[in-house]
Image 1 (cartoon, rainbow, N blue to C red):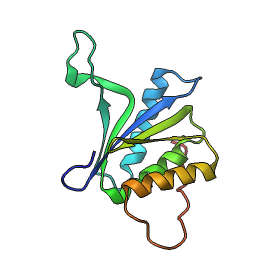
Image 2 (cartoon, one colour; image 1 turned 180 degrees about the vertical axis):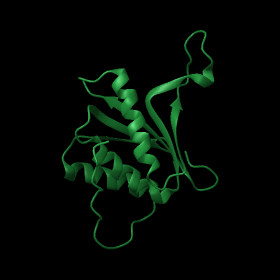
Image 3 (cartoon, rainbow, N blue to C red; image 1 turned 120 degrees about the vertical axis):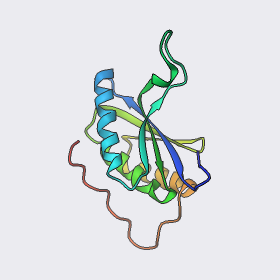
Length: 143
């Protein structure tokens, strides 16, 4: 969702791989949150699920593997690039990114296909990139 201040609320949902469990997904979500906070974003919060279990307080219910990133539109490209590199060599099958009700699933597909999908998504939700060569994705230190 876009707020009045021109910021985006990006909803990220990690989809665990076949050989990972909920505990590992929780740990990976925390690591991704740490990496996202290194970018030029305003906030990265654990997402709250819509329904609390019986007897639980609704405000205390965390959606497993889900984050909400609040950022300016210009940072959308860096968030998506981070997701691309972060997914490599992790037991996460995909990360679904939702902005303004529109979603894209970043996953292990060919770089060319993924690049086309991401560019179309960013063009719809972010500012136009400056002319010139495309910067290479940042190296992932393995977090």
